[in-house]
Length: 118
Image 1 (tube, helix red, strand yellow):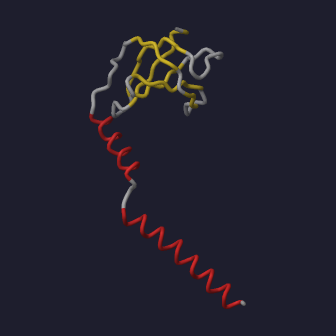
Image 2: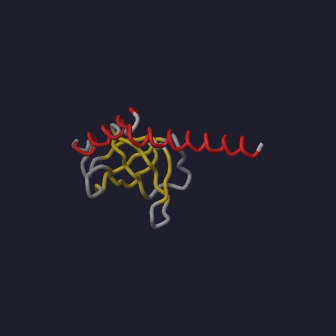
Image 3: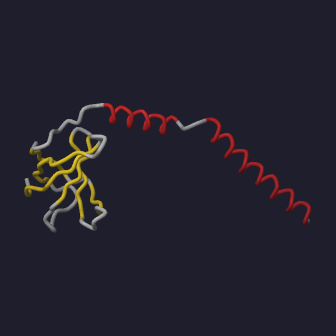
């Protein structure tokens, strides 16, 4: 009985390690490759906004800035814009007016200030 249990555990261990090795050496899945390619393309394109631009956007979600301040995450043509100075009653899916104030180092996202509800 103990021999059978040991054998079963050994087979399970071989299957788990073998499956991990196959995934490791086959490379990323097609979904992951598509995501990486989209990320590279986004890094190479010009941002669809400029400093000073004013836009109406929808709030997609919220994040907390390292300072502890709540920021809205929005997108302009797929380009991520973090919005500061939000009214406390703004919620996901609300439309707000923003003004672009800066870009991150690689110009892959922007920061904006909230001008008010749309």
